[in-house]
Length: 101
Image (cartoon, rainbow, N blue to C red; front, side):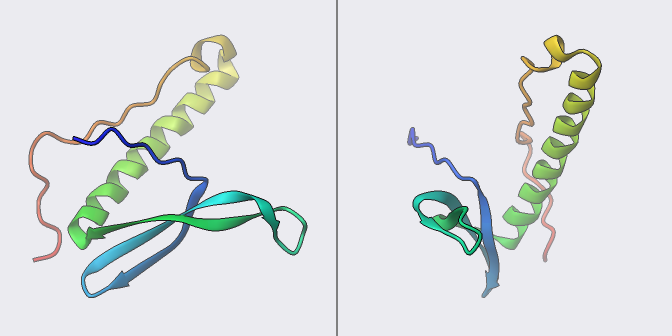
């Protein structure tokens, strides 16, 4: 197992070619600026996955987004409690069903 981490400010582009989904992650440049003078988003790394892998990942991202939304609502009600709560959406331990036959 590798012990490598990647920081990204977001996904710049998603491309589907030949049954594989390519996610291009971006970071904000310290030197390059956009037309408005803000740091420009520049390519950092690409992740390539199968269509099934992408669809299963999209479902996990949706779960995490819902958990973060709930956490944000709690932090408005009780700021000291929700600000220290981690959000963890674990991968399923059973193989995912195939979405594309």
